[in-house]
Length: 207
Image 1 (cartoon, helix red, strand yellow):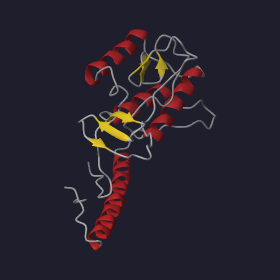
Image 2: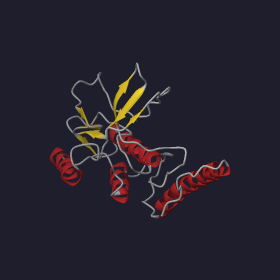
Image 3: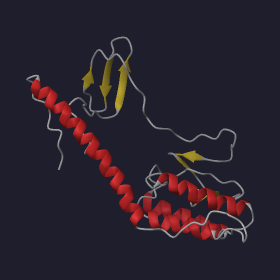
């Protein structure tokens, strides 16, 4: 990982926490004693108890076309059930496609075609946490939603979804690099402080 820091030790998954002694045991059976504070930053899972028919497994809703439309009942649409993409732009594309379909101005493929799409994704990524990842076909996902959405109704100011632009990837990678550069600078500052205090810190650089 590029996010190394001399004041941070990366450990595997937490296995056991003894609240009485303050000892934490990790998946590799290493331990840390006298722990005072634990921050839970475990992400989130989906839960729809008010929609008992919807099956949620490994952070994905089963039976969604394009991660949006319920194949059994396309009048039910979900926004945001994706990962590893240009998230907010994709959510906008999803919302426009869903709104146009619900307004009766867009068409979806047949049920069999939609189920075949889901089967193909399962074959490629598995039926687990990697299923909602669109990082390996960002252009195809954008274009799939744009094809569903089509054009806004004549005479309206509806959103026109532009074709996928490869320069979006450049902008996204630029943001990632800026974040990495900021972190590397923070690590260097911490390393210098350790050396100034006569402590040999870890090498915070990375290839």
